[in-house]
Amino acid sequence: MIKYLMVLFAVMLPGIAAASAATGETLDLTSHWVGYTAIAVFVLAYVFVMAEEFTHLRKSKPVILAAGIIWAMIAAVYASNGLDHAAEVAVRHNFLEYSELMLFLLVAMTYINAMDERQVFDALRSWLIRKGFGFRQLFWLTGILAFFISPIADNLTTALLMCAVVLAVGGSNTKFISIACINIVVAANAGGAFSPFGDITTLMVWQKGIVDFWAFFALFVPSVVNFLIPAAIMHFAVPNEHPTTSGEVVSMKRGAKRIIVLFLLTITTAVCFHNFLHLPPVIGMMTGLAYLQLFGFFLKKTCGRDESHPTAKMGEVVPFDVFNRIARAEWDTLLFFYGVVLCVGGLGFIGYLSLVSEVMYTQWGPTNANIAVGVLSAIVDNIPVMFAVLTMNPDMSQGQWLLVTLTAGVGGSLLSIGSAAGVALMGQARGHYTFFGHLKWAPVIGLGYAASIWVHMWINASLF
Image 1 (tube, rainbow, N blue to C red):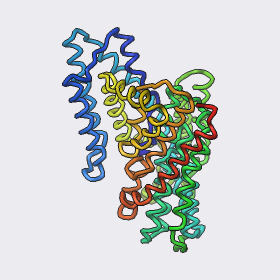
Image 2 (cartoon, rainbow, N blue to C red):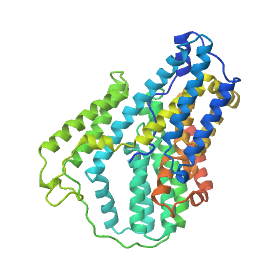
Image 3 (spheres, one colour):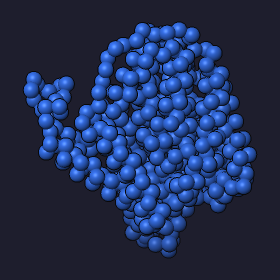
Image 4 (tube, rainbow, N blue to C red):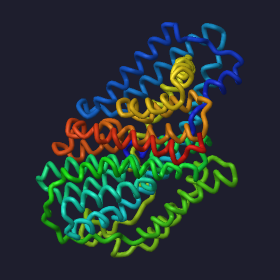
């Protein structure tokens, strides 16, 4: 359920510097045909990524191919100049960084899928539907829940859950579904911006060690502002009606609450390993996976008739299997991150990110550059943008690093294609929530974007 998540990759690469130190020499290929070709290959691959909704070509395929082509060209040029192992050292560093984040996300996805299998999300959805809230109440309730669930469950999973509620109660009321989905996207992205677990971009920044775990919560108030301003304005466009309610009751399966507790314990383990033992957070997450594996073994051994599954045959018991949850992870997303990390790492090794860093962070200044990052993330997607910033590793204050974390996280709300949550909801609420429906409210969302930046620079002025 975590399509993009949820997503964001942990450690970003001080790759160029590491490679230079290891090999003693790097080549400037920014004016070489390899450099121009690498840019063309990456741009073409990303065109296919953005067109996934229309071509139905999985986004991981073009970027994985592009990564292979880019690094093959780099390696060929280095080998022809007698630097046989320089590209190898650089790409291994990229791959190590990706591996840490991939395993981190895999554990998070496994827990989310386990909770989904135990019907945690279905139970919450049925409860909301049975309450008989009006459209305006549901508009605010789904938005607030999206804001507070996304810091833990990630913005994509949260958006999908709240969208399912909206679709269930909205029926054929396209106006309500459309504006409620916009509100959910904005709320989920805003909620994910103040937590290391809420978005892949925040996870990247935390795992690289640039911002301490608790420091992210300085973005709580700016994130609230980012959500509330557009929601307050859109409130008046929500139909003041009551939908038809459903009496369906969905109960969580045995062990559901304990899995939620284990997930929170896993997050705590990752934070403690990183803060107190100075180990990579992924080690704590993998330790937490063992919690789920052992509890899954317990569920399997004590499986009874209450474990029967709706798709099972009469009287058949379907026990919990943690490896089925791992298998259901969003592998296309994990492989997409592989392609992005290696493509951007390759462009950085060529020398382009140094040029971009010089223009943005030296000539424009950090504040203007970080605001531009948020706008760019609405078009390109925040993952490669944030990865590029972390690879450039500009010398900035903690306030500026929090600013770029905020803008990259909430900037994707400006367009429906700017975030994983928006892209996913366009598919889930096809025909109701569209690109142009979201675009109509872009000025209002932009107002919240600008206000959140101003609030951050005001209340966190001491960090700049």
